[in-house]
Image 1 (cartoon, rainbow, N blue to C red):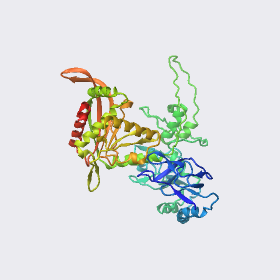
Image 2 (tube, helix red, strand yellow; image 1 turned 30 degrees about the vertical axis):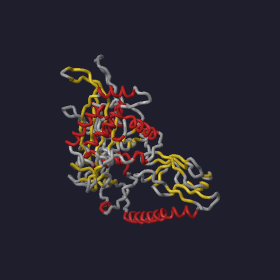
Image 3 (cartoon, rainbow, N blue to C red; image 1 turned 180 degrees about the vertical axis):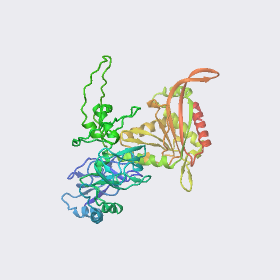
Image 4 (cartoon, one colour; image 1 turned 90 degrees about the vertical axis):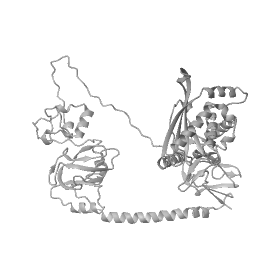
Length: 544
């Protein structure tokens, strides 16, 4: 009889899995213990073993695709067996849901379509522009035009206050201002109705009413919303406008300021045109886009041979942005660290440790055959012993209670290609330096080779993160919840220190302790660091 294989829960926090690769294909014989696939969880990429025998009849999740825990992953059964009933049974619920969603969507579409009002020919709906990359709404600081005024291309309609500055909003259309949708001092979201421009006498009451009811069709061919939103940042080629109007007034003030629209300035900069040489056709001789586009430079004779021509260059280069799908591990890291940073009130304590004795002790220990101890192993051991003396740091915060852990399990942060994992050294305080070193190397190797098990990454009560091997002198970390603190370990650096009244060269290592203020107070954290400093500076005390 065919068996349904569901997406397994390979870690305690796993909500969905991504199939990294299938090691079997449809039609292959499956034995108990065979590896079916490699599945990427929120913590690691792990092999998924079959507990059934038979033939692989169906694959429900293709490579690179993700699926929630307990959804259909595969079907195993006898060769040639009909599994359509199982397949239909697993998809019926989702199909019903999709049908309901489709029905609701169709209903909503009908309502919107019914309420939508077509925009009259020659009428332009001007929406609130996005004048900065982070702008979500704009406030009208002032209107420079009133209802009934004639609008020319390049005229400034209003001054709009964004989240970064107050900017002039230029019209790229001609006609009569028929309606103002946002009054001075009022705010409106990006792409909402700002004004309506069209032929004089056009009745736009239906458009206004439709806007109030949310049924305004702003996708008219005359003024696509996407184009309007981009007009301030990306000028596009327009037809040349022939005009016989000549402006004799100067476009500069006594102070030398050139009156030009922002778009005209941008085009002039791109083309290397000096705006002082351009005659403006806008209000009061203001230079607009068409003035720059129609400008023809005139060669000027120069009597001063010492004058050097200055050419303006616009730097051109390819701009490319690539989107990479976030892995399950990356999502889990973002979620966990975001929750920790924004729910736990962090505070940081820093201390310097004299490593001269530790360096000498490590050299003596490593001289023993088949023995290798790192400075990180010494820090982990000292941390576990300091936690014994300061149980307040070895805690977990819950809303109603604080959990005091009698066991000490130190997690050691390990960088892998996909992100960061934290293997846990269980009962660290009971292990020797060599045992800690062997455990750290074993678990770190498993993590980098994607062989680590969920049980080996859970249950930590404290975490150590070390970037000293990268030359980082000091840094702060985000607490690895449900821990109450995390220790950041920097590099050992030689620097001048004072010993016995003399300035000598010392070996100094900086430690930073991030604490959750809900469980660990400043004095408690400081006392913990003092004890930790004593153990590291005097390694022999860790043998007592």
